[in-house]
Image (cartoon, rainbow, N blue to C red; front, top):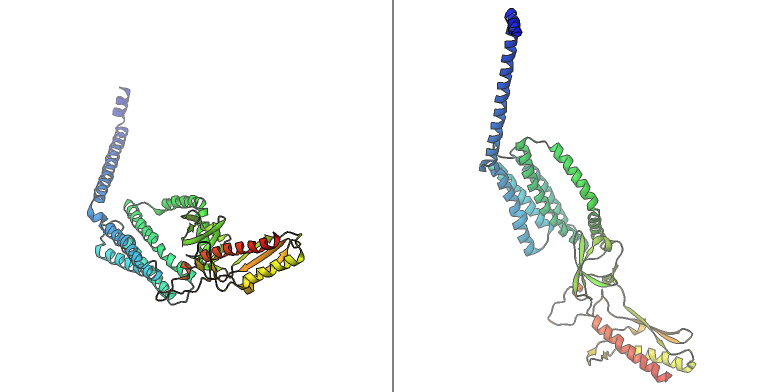
Length: 392
């Protein structure tokens, strides 16, 4: 009652209060109208996202990329094998198709329309430079290891294409939602930092691959010493090497870092030597010891006609008598024999199959092995007979 009387007695104050109340009502109506407009825009945006016109450009560009990276390139590699020039050529054609697709289907209403055309132009230019670089390498003289490395580089284009696909989709979504790359870049940097620590061993293996190829430590088909035995290299990949273990008759997968640290490449040997001792006893008369050594030399000088193994088969001689050595050791108590072989991993026996083309040396590296093992067996038995005939 008192306030009513006050307002009646003061009409100016009453007018001001009425204007303030009306202003608040107008502000509430404006804010509500603005909120309704935002809600309507969000609804329209969501509806737009589920239209074909919105995703058409992205879908066609992704199909253009995946058609080459997942279909055409694997089929071509399956027919002709890995080839850097072919891979770079297909990658160039892929990006030209991407550029043509972007030009034909670009639309202001399509997702990512502001950046896809620019990306397609840049990728077409980069792929052209890559193709020209691969073409220049084609005319350079490279060793086998460098050629393998170039061929392995052809596998890089597929993950690069997948990365382009991911960028297209992510960029289209961010562009239409009005989001900024800053927060995403910060998140990616944290993820990449964690991956860097987690994949330190993988990076080490990849760098070891580069050293293996550039320094030509070994290649496919070579026999190397690993795990206490000799294994054959089948394939050298970016992170690991596949070797065949003859003991288990199965493949082994060895990290490249373990092989690059130090490896004995048996396929690049330059001789074959077998050494052993035959005990004759220190108390044997000098004449008999001398006779035993002479008969050993006689045995080595009469090997050119070959020998017959215990299996009854005739084998050609693999011992070079002039490079062998026979001498007494252990104060005359042992006869030490050092045998030099004609053939070894890098020098297989002479090819003597008429009418049949000689295969690659990598497939003939162990042709000597069976004959050599049987000859060692034959020589040891013959040497024991010599010793027994003079020490009995």
